[in-house]
Image 1 (spheres, rainbow, N blue to C red):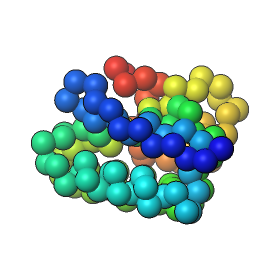
Image 2 (cartoon, helix red, strand yellow):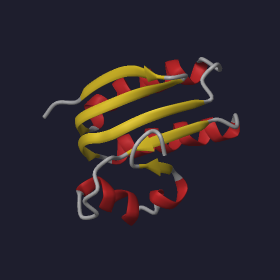
Image 3 (cartoon, rainbow, N blue to C red):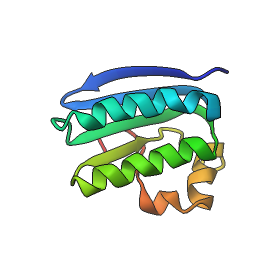
Length: 112
């Protein structure tokens, strides 16, 4: 499935919802949206919802880590929302195998 990117707000936090496969050709869409929201210093938190994403390649992970680092330097948060409770699901395993589950702030729902 092709990548779909939807931007919405919940309270003061913007949410980037991703559906489908996050691969090299589509990563620029995510990077552009994250860059726009990052440059708006009014946002102390940005949420990236990957609940409906099926796959993230290394380029996609690189963008997530890059913006996570930028946000941390500004004492702001990039929160990854992954509402898939199945521990054997691809993204859950990916975050665990890469140890990003220990580095990134990953929550089941935005309220967490």
